[in-house]
Amino acid sequence: MDDCIFCKIVNKEIPAQVVYEDDEILAFKDIKPLAPVHVLVIPKKHIPDLTAITGEDTGLIGRLHLVATRLAEELGVADSGFRFVNNCKGDGGQVVFHLHFHLLGGRQLRGLG
Ligand code: 5GP
Ligand code: ZN
Image 1 (cartoon, helix red, strand yellow):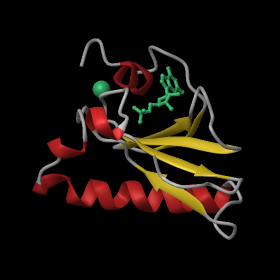
Image 2 (image 1 turned 90 degrees about the horizontal axis):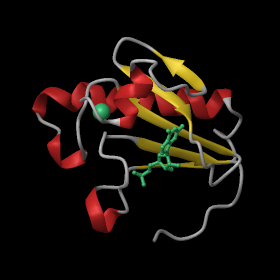
Image 3 (image 1 turned 30 degrees about the vertical axis):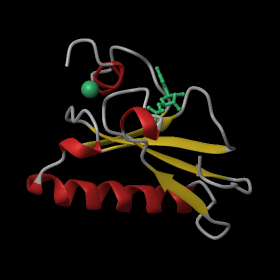
Image 4 (image 1 turned 180 degrees about the horizontal axis):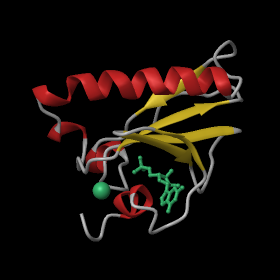
């Protein structure tokens, strides 16, 4: 997608602090971290939001979670705990319309919303 900021990060047109990369997944530090650990885990392919996934994406969605748990271990929050969340569309608080999950940890997180 031409004007998608996360596609530009995937294509290295915009810099990011990448913490994980494979053929289909990229993880990088959030530019405005809300916690000591705040990483965005995204599929490289452009999916606008969670409602746009199909049956073909179930493996990908599982692997995004596996990457998140491995990163939580690497970043030292697997034992203390963390949150792995998606904001979907307007009421969900989504601002960037390329599917992404937030990995948050390193402090006590309070309620949702
Ligand atoms: P959303 O509200 O859509 O779930 O979250 C989007 C997240 O993307 C926000 O936490 C925001 O700080 C982050 N973000 C927006 N633009 C950039 C960028 O250019 N680089 C990085 N690393 N993060 C970004
Ligand atoms: Zn995109």
